[in-house]
Image (cartoon, rainbow, N blue to C red; front, side):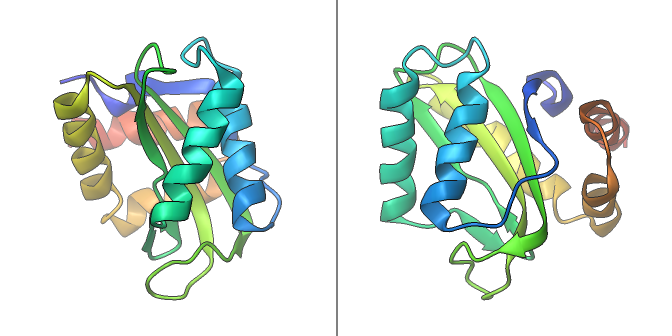
Length: 153
């Protein structure tokens, strides 16, 4: 299985995300994804991501949201991360503000791999020490190092 650290694209990392409405946050995540070579149609992809979030929030509680999408507008799998230090309302089931956003993208024909990666990410996020490393990282490389260390466990 591909490691999460290998899917992380530095162009899709924002450690100073500003607090805002859900649609503004989703648009910013789509903008980050469009920086990569994985997105083949940025406008269409942003629309799809907004529609996905309108259907059901991807906030899972504990200050975490995992917006994820399979799309024909995605050429390869990519993981992006955005952090909002003050937290923002994102419709989490526990009512807590979200600080960490994990954007997980894959081509539409990669469902099985996408689900495996999503499951692995969710398992990693159950580790409080790992989450703390992500909350205190100052660079994309520190984020990648946290993932690499977790992958070695």
